[in-house]
Length: 633
Ligand SMILES: Nc1ncnc2c1ncn2[C@@H]1O[C@H](COP(=O)(O)OP(=O)(O)OP(=O)(O)O)[C@@H](O)[C@H]1O
Image (tube, rainbow, N blue to C red; front, side, top):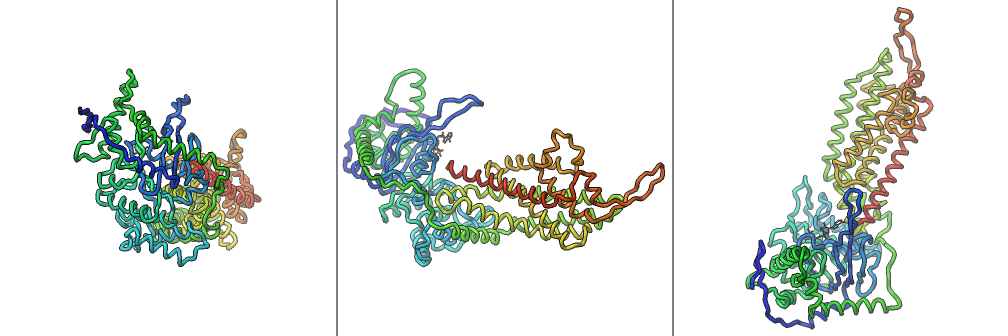
């Protein structure tokens, strides 16, 4: 009998196929990773209404023994969710059941001692293959291991993964042409193999690779586990036969249900026994996915009206001899764990290296990244030179005549606005590297605080300080501000603090959201509102009393006040005043004019504290945002 669906023909058979019991027993050795009744659900909402939870994994159990273990299923069946749960990379929220590692509870630091290769390669493109591997070795191997041994490990991994020819080639990014897709994937695997993990997880490692490269990557994984008795667990969507036949165990998922778990070579037999026969020359993986898709469609029809279990693959697997044996074995393992009196549970999250070492390595990598990819810093410098020249020419050599004070205020307003808005690009700096941060931080490379500190010292400060020095020198002297060393340094320091405060705001929003355009919109909105309370567009004394407190929340106000006080104090401006029909010239002190605008000439230090508070508050908030990301993943 043949049943047709849109894509495939699935033969329903009545043949009897024998079961290889020894293979099942072998699968169920306590060595490896076992999972018991793992359920994963997420809350759902429609506007403000809470809907029933979406169940992504429905009480799935199995065991991943040394060898190549594949998790297969149609798209959206829950492969990545299961892989992440087994790898300990999902928050505990919504997850129930047990994951045991070699018969013990999964340790808290499991992420640090196991390897995880994400689907989209995350690796520093400006570094060579070897440098990336050294980076992994430097941070993930304990400092007690001598450097010579770390070097040996790097060389060994390069050889093992066949990366010798491209070891000194840059990985590549949007700007740099680097290594091929297969080499990139192998480098990602190498980053994990450096720690010689017993467990290696891979999320769809063949996605985006051509057929030949995909086979070679999976063959490599097969060698890795046969060489070292390692447990390799990979999710895969629809492998070709040459890949499929390399799997030792197979876990098949359909809409979160476990529809097969057992030795790979028994899978076709199971399907034949429950009535689905694979045609000769058909790829078993294609056949199984066709059966799953067909049964999912039929189940959906039946659920609308009817009561037929023949298409319920989960029920048929559970009631099969294979399903019953596997359930018995996993139950036994769980029982053994429960009966144990002394559990070897690791509850602390330990990094392999100390904070100082992590910071040094991160600073070295970031510096290398800037040196090898100087476009952004060069562009920032050029833009600042252009802005410096434009403002310098526009406000060239201001005098202290009737417009002297107002023009100075205008120049200062423009410079502060310029400094604040140009720092919006700090958003991109972080968002583009967020996947790398999430992956490395989850893998125990470094602490969040180390990442943060290295980001500030190597990315933010050099990108702001050098262009700012050049900008300040051009603009300050072209405009003709007071020639006084102390005043120049106060001017520079105020702009530097402002720049740091604005970067912190940008950093916070980029930690909060993942989409650059949304982050830019939120930052621009916050800056524009603050700009209204700067004291330039409307005198601070003229602000309605119910809203005048907002000026103290404006970084613009503090920066403009500090710079205006610095410049106008000590100058005397001439003004034309109408005295009963005759225009006469009067002299006014800069400090008096400042007071008219609502600025306080004695507030310089308070202004600096105000601007610095921006950096402190938003840096702290950005840090909290990063910690929340870490907790989620
Ligand atoms: N946090 C979440 N909130 C809502 N739905 C989720 C969440 N995580 C996963 N899902 C849904 O659960 C289902 C399974 O997702 P998962 O990514 O595990 O599937 P998959 O088999 O790996 O899919 P693919 O092959 O397309 O990557 C999908 O329908 C997905 O949209």
